[in-house]
Figure (cartoon, rainbow, N blue to C red):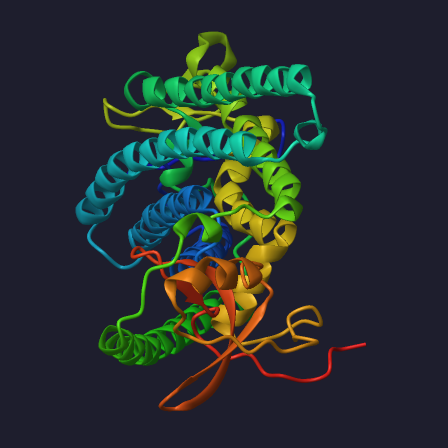
Length: 433
């Protein structure tokens, strides 16, 4: 068995590429599992809310869903890695545990770096989308052709800069997958153990209150979503059947793709924060991995690691508090991203509330109701669409199951307006004070 003992001037902060010893790093593994499960949960919520309750900006919605999907995939890789690493410490044959840990470390490290590369390009694409949709006050001034051209030039330069940022973030990650041992690989193999053996009671409390509770919430939410999706599909199928029988016409798709100016700036700032956070968590470690003098390798004759014996294809790299902070930042980044999205975007928060629990805020309860015919003639279609184009406009229409109050939420592939936050009917009532 390979044994790695910790010795670092920074104290209990080091991370090793591969560490196996007689003691199990339960506390460190539990902390990593908690963080990664949180990543899976948050990204699952964001991903499902985007998929089943799309935003009005289709392109940004696609980018956002891709961000959540990539982060979700990254979380799956890392959770599996942490579980495999932890399982290798159990009562398993030494040969099996060592081989399982080594092989999964290699596969997981490559997968993590690939997902990081995809994320960097997605963030650049999100920035591109925001810059092209973000409204400018100068464009609203009459006879301001010169100002419009200046704004357009700025957008082109900033768009090119965002793409360049994505490339600069992606290239080192790609190179690191083949040339260096980056911090993702070391963390993929598990954190170094450098604390007293925690008590069984403490581990049980941490496990139940974080790991088990989080997964129970995720499973419960999944069942609720599946049930509501099936019910909604059945109701939409009935509505489509009635629409075909009555020969409803298609609406103008452009009316449903307008981007809300109120959401422009927060989402643009959010995208900038995402790119900055990614750069902050990745670039220092890429530099430390690429430049030889920033890291040191040790063999079995080293004074600080007298009992270390590693396979020929692996290196033991001593790290300090600097590298450890950014390593944990990289893993916490995917948990932070959906949190920032939920915090900064009022529209996405509303979508999530109505998607998962039918919770209404004071602005979601309609103050006045507007009755709109579900089927209108071609001459009235465009006028009616303009009147109800705002995403907060309540629309009251009837089905065989009764009256339903819905809000406009985009358009379908066939150009028909998509009503509702698709899982629950709005309730008419007095707004909260």
